Length: 627
View 1: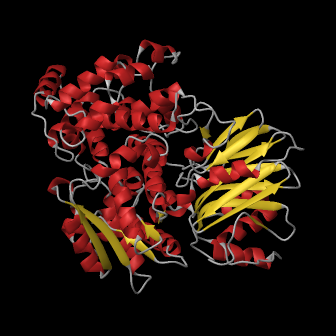
View 2: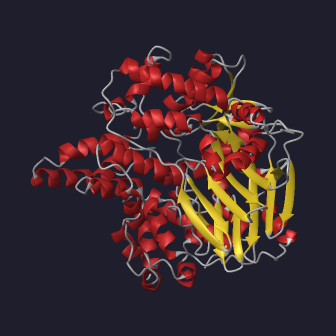
View 3: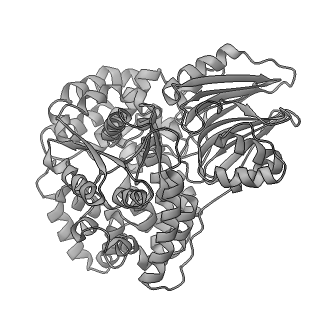
């Protein structure tokens, strides 16, 4: 696992400044504290900060092959590199290391960019070809690892994190207003946009080819859903079990200590269970909270005992995550309205005391329909058939419910349901998953900010994503949106930044390409059976884990933000959202922000989601001086 940086000058006779390259790499030293490497080849400069995982002694980067033509800077892991090494060796390639990075080098020598099809893994990579004077950037299929880039008049710049891009003198700090509007709508910035106007994110499953001063971006992989051939549980579970076992086994490859994040939920328990089959000793890690509505540690302990793992647990007091909030501007790298980055960071920091690699269960909800929103969509179909008057009475009753600040409280869920239940499927999902609707943004943003949005706030980025989603069945349409949006731009960004801030590599075997393709081919009823989520996964594990573990409702990985905003975080909220500061910023209407804060503080509404999304952006913009 590493962080990569670099740039290519548009002028072929240009000579890059290595000092700029080194400053960029220094900003992401947390991604690779073990080593650094730099190479300048004509107009191209590549840099790597390395966290040593495989081939600790000879796997230094950037790396080249026999003739010194192809150079690779690589962030990630290739889980089938041993099989590829055998195939490439048989074809005549000579390996000098045991590194998965060298596998990419020789695969590229053999097939060029088509070598991406052979790679099973997570990656953000850069490949420079001396002979053709071409740079290729590529991002893995699901977007587990990040790649930012900027196409400038003087050349192309790239990095694993946005903060490294700030160190290049050609990168402007001007805010992209359309990205801000999309962030307010969804809590994350949809690729290819970033929060900076001059910087873009390479979308998952895409590659960028830069040659002759011109850049071309193309898709090299996308998930394909179909209606799914009818099958019974025993068939579906057999296919799924086989591919899960293969993926988890390959994800265990490591030359350094490795463990598993274990929350006691279905997904992390699945990963731990398959991992335990392939190792004699397995370390698992969880954190607990004093606030019982947010604590799942008892379930993690129980699963660990059943599987016979060496379980490590840290119970945290109420201020553990609270102390991290002021530093969110650095931690998130780019604004991200998901407060679970706080416990994810704490868990990563705890696990890093014992291991360098951890497997997690991320991705299971988006593959197998695990979120309550999928159940809500099914209920919304019934809701739509109810008389309009009955719906109006029900909506009024829900909106009169007293506010609770517990994790996923009933009133919070019901109020969000009625807010979107009457909308079309795609818009409804955006409303349920995001923070500020386009209508709410028109009241939140100043006239000056709205003037920088020619078409006004909208769900345009969401609708662009939806245009590539399957039209039917409705469940696959929503799963595609979550896989490409909420997971690809939100959850995976959260896990990457939180773990790499602790120099910990986190792997996600449920997002192995082979698992994703098996899941996508399953019929909808194998994922959501009436109101039962993750039906096939639960069926697979029904005799391997206790029924109450397999069937227990999803809790999520939250923190008591709603309460914090009224207590410990109250001074920070008022300081960051000060009327004078907001007026100087010119983006948000002070009165609108004051109303949100006041309603929340008085207990009239639960605005935890809106306030957190706003707070993260303001902390980030202040930290990085973005205008």
